[in-house]
Amino acid sequence: MATTEELVTHQGGCHCKRVRWKVRAPSKVVCWDCNCTICLMRQNLHFIVPASQFELEKSSEEWLTLYTFETHQAKHLFCKVCGILSFYVPRSNPDGYAVTVRCVDPGTIEIGRIHTFDGQNWESSYSQSNISASSKQ
Image (cartoon, rainbow, N blue to C red):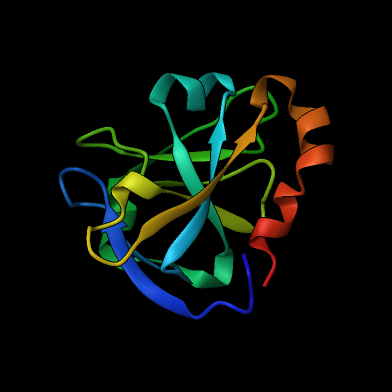
């Protein structure tokens, strides 16, 4: 996340609105398009922020369920009611959150650049992409 850009507060959540959060990020975000097995299936386009810039509403915690697979490092948090994954802790950035850009409420956010992350070849893509810098302040 660029530190020279002014941060704004974006709000968003899942489809049924039981999971709600706020995130501080630029108004124009740099997104990642990943082709790992789960992101490819759900056509996930996300941006990454440091954990300190993400705030889950307390009332949302009871509506989340956790899914992990393979290395169990990524923490996929789905709404128990509508099934939407509006954010998660990515394997590439365990110190941050990946926010599904299409789950941000309209009016405050614009998609800037889109980087491709080759999740099917995770290790080589991770070392070449500099994605880990996305969650640094």
